[in-house]
Image 1 (tube, helix red, strand yellow):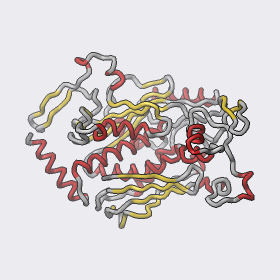
Image 2 (tube, one colour; image 1 turned 45 degrees about the horizontal axis):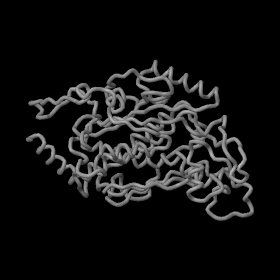
Image 3 (tube, one colour; image 1 turned 60 degrees about the vertical axis):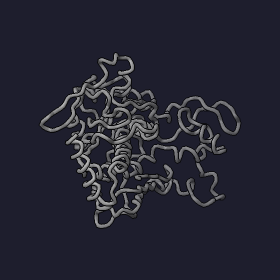
Length: 391
């Protein structure tokens, strides 16, 4: 089974990601992986940290001569900012420099600071925020890029775009996948919106937040094209693929709601206008749909249409104009701590969303078709597709 783990702190020496269960002989495009990392770093409203870092994936194991070898893949992403934090984040106990430990004594509302401090019995939220930070998602993007390369071998591609930012949103219409995919070729990422006029209005929303020393959230959409019918299951609750996708996207820092297809709108719409009517194309021997409001999944199983997942991102909790908090030591009312942060991270969140969707789809794909080598997986898929064609 495909599994992945990440380790590392925001200002530690680096981030580590491991990916287990990928078949042998999957070509690894290192430039593609690093391009995905750069996409995560881009976007209007990012903070000063992105001017320091230059994220590059160092493959430590699991790949030889440009191909996976079936063993665990390990990736290291070094933190360039580590040089400024070596004493504060030292693994060893440097008692003589405790005054440089950069303790965080007043937790930020909306962050993991207080809840994590209570859970682990810390009087310093630094211990919490370093791991809870969204910096961790760079590791997810790296291994997610490898999952995307695996899926591409079978004609499956994922892409994301911003559909709403603050009070500005794209018109409710079906956006062709090609328009979303084309955003990948844009050299300078602004807000990753397919409509330049709407994007300009979104940029004004970010400018307002910057001026007000505030932050702004919004909604990103991830689309996966080419996913075959039959991934997932309705047999057990934890095998339902829609639930797995929702959990994966919800796990992204600051995401507070997840939607598949037009799920939110569907809740207030009569069933006769919700469910995707079924047809059949005799030439291609394929069942078809007149719409895709289900987002490509029914009963926890992919139905052959595009998989569409939306993540609703709250505004970042670190504010240049801090909210009220309480000092850990005195219990007195104080302003929350301020950590260098972003104003808007929607484009980056979309890239992370792509990675998480790709990892979940790759895992489900391998659960369905198996294979210790790419060739074996392809044979199994081809056999299944022939079965579906003859249905």
